[in-house]
Length: 118
Image 1 (cartoon, rainbow, N blue to C red):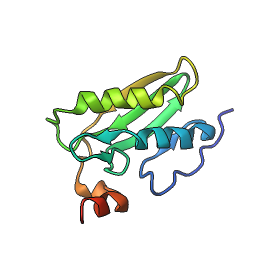
Image 2: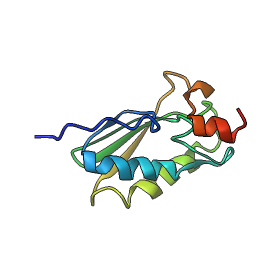
Image 3: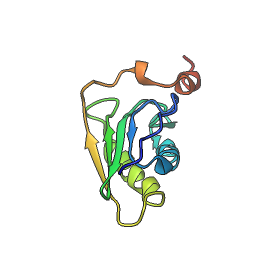
Image 4: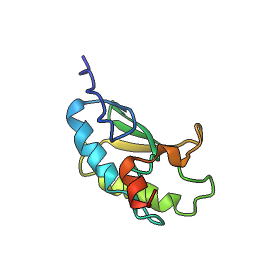
């Protein structure tokens, strides 16, 4: 029987499905991934649309600020680097880039707005 996931802290801004014990370490790992152009966390920018961890797979739904983002490969590599140490051994990481709904600045956290002067 799978444990019922705890609610996602509002500041995370995305749904989390999976072992509740992994929620905090995964969210904190994703917070360490920065958009290289803005120097802000992908979580605070609202680029993470959801996380699902089940059956040895961590699936991250992610968007970029634009479809032609030249740094998407770097961000994806950083996600792998930060998540691998906090996931159970032999978990695969799958990144699903999605464009619907499209990213807008409205998805940013209050923290990101303050850092960008807005």
